Amino acid sequence: MKKLSLAITLMFVPCLAQAWPWSQDMANQVSIKPQESVDSTKPGMAPFPKRSQPVAGTMVFVKDQDAARNMVNPVAADDKSVAQGARLYAIYCTPCHGKSGTGDGLVGEKLVMKPWDLTNTNQMHSWNPKEYPDGYIFGYMSLGGAVMPSYANDLSATERWHVVNYVRRVLQKGQAGITAAQAK
Picture (spheres, rainbow, N blue to C red):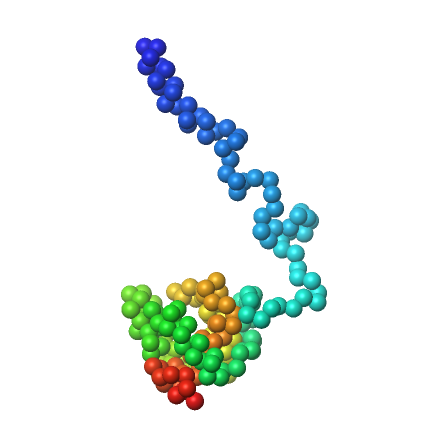
């Protein structure tokens, strides 16, 4: 009987050892977490210095879709930008939106909600720049939508603007599949 009780006790020792204070996860230690204020009266992230300037091509914070709509495309829609946008579109957008931009990608076909048709030939959106400015497309890529994920972590702000230039200059002019030089 003593051997049985000793065996049972030894089986439960590892379970009890997990309850000791030294087994705490490192994430639960006393420290300041990213974007956490040290001042309890002013929670949240510290504001940027008044005269700070963002570095081109780095993270751009977009509050919401309305704020993004008012953004102006800082990247000229030249051949180089459109070619870069075509390359990025092929990597990130083609699976859902398809090469033609009509929402007929291999992944898009399996979704309950069909991806948006990015061309001017669709019935849902005219893609008139006055109604849907470049900032709207940029914001949708940055924030995501009902089915579309956010690409703010995958594409830099400049890269997202390149994709906007490609969508505007090639897909919405019905010239998908041609090179940027031919899209002039």
